[in-house]
Amino acid sequence: MKVKIENQGDDAIRVITDHDNLNDATLDAGGTDVFESEDEGVIELRELRGAGE
Image (cartoon, rainbow, N blue to C red; front, side, top):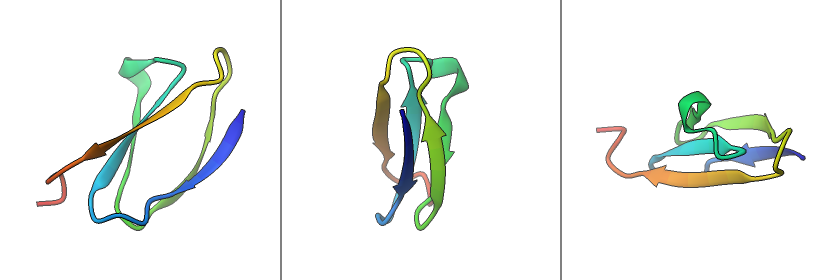
């Protein structure tokens, strides 16, 4: 699975693919990026409240 994610919120988002917490990514507020899930087809998003302060 391959998806393009646009963060329209005020806080950064943590992006975890295939339950791999060690190789996660951060998508800053206003950012856009493409993420690809290879094994399990799971892309998890978590809001990082206050990370931009």
